[in-house]
Length: 495
Ligand SMILES: [Zn+2]
Ligand SMILES: [Zn+2]
Ligand SMILES: [Zn+2]
Image 1 (cartoon, helix red, strand yellow):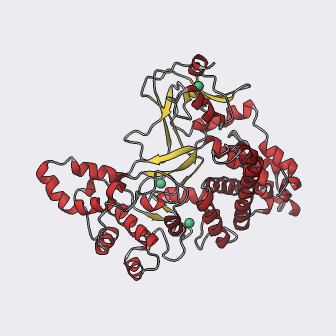
Image 2 (cartoon, rainbow, N blue to C red):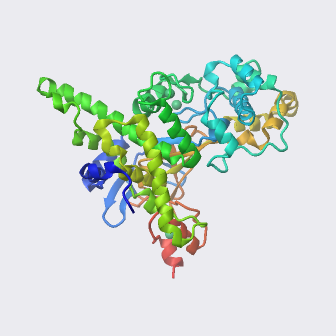
Image 3 (cartoon, rainbow, N blue to C red):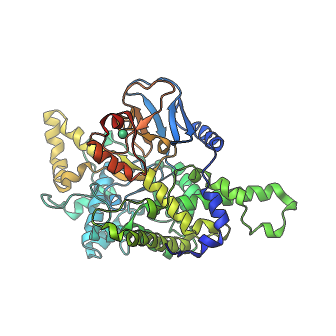
């Protein structure tokens, strides 16, 4: 394939240092440190030559035990899902109130189908700023609502069989004038705005707002206090990602995270050097600091996106090279938009197509669906379960709302995320653990539960695919992950 990115050749040495797989000792140290910040007593990550990393039980687990709660390294909500669910941009907890969740959804849906309607603008003026995620003028979500976007099942169902709520009702749901019966039983954290002043990121707390700002968002914010070079480029990048592949948003977060971390390490380093620092050190990239900043990303298994992506069924195998070239060019387009928005001279190598392709490939190979159950669904189930007379009374208010929502009352928060420890878990078609959200798991963390007793020393495995499929179909799906499964079940069923 021809080279299309000049940074690839200019920074070949730095790039190969960044992409060098970590040594077993580095892996050990990194994950030991990480484990101290996670709810995961009794796990260890081990590198074993042939199969790469694996996660092993360090004590016995019973069936149903919590094995791991893993905090994501980066995550993003699907763009269309942002219409349905207002969640914290950092921990993905639902925020605001039941009424705001519902009212805002109707409001944004109407905005999507009839942009710049007069009543939209009027309504907009009555709603507190905090409640509106989207500007009525040129929002990404509007265009997504119109063109269908790149997400499947978590999108709202079509509007058939739904009876729309009058606009006054939508407005009073959003501004708090209409309180639904018993909704106090489902309190949600108040909405906290972005520190940078954008109206795209909202949080469950000041803590989440600050953490997100510190780690990622200060470079990726479109608000007035953003540290981005060009907010217009940033908006174009986001729009391109929403229209093509939202994994680009995760890649942008990974790069932003590395740049911000590098700057912090550099500041500390310069302070330590004090008067010995010479002027030309200031603008030069310090490779050891860049490698340190990059460490969390370096730990993930990576391949180039355009090399590892599965050939879609509708692409003829003779067109494979052209298809892979197209994917590479798509990544390059996205990277140029990102570069215009957040370029950093000292971290220039991060803007090489080689690095970008590997980051995207890492997310494609390792990402987990991000799912958070909706309190709106809980609310309507609760109303349905009330004793008859109470239910009858409540339904006088809730029935029109439910009729307007249709099946959408249960839409959960959906997105995609990369979890550092979970991503080290290997696949088995007869896994001993699985990702499963319990009633109390109300944020974006990955929760891994034991499916059967796991003994100390045993490897903890999860299934990457539907393990009930026939042997050949399983192997075909797993080929996309770049391996042939040799788990006990496959050895037994295989040829
Ligand atoms: Zn939060
Ligand atoms: Zn912001
Ligand atoms: Zn298998």
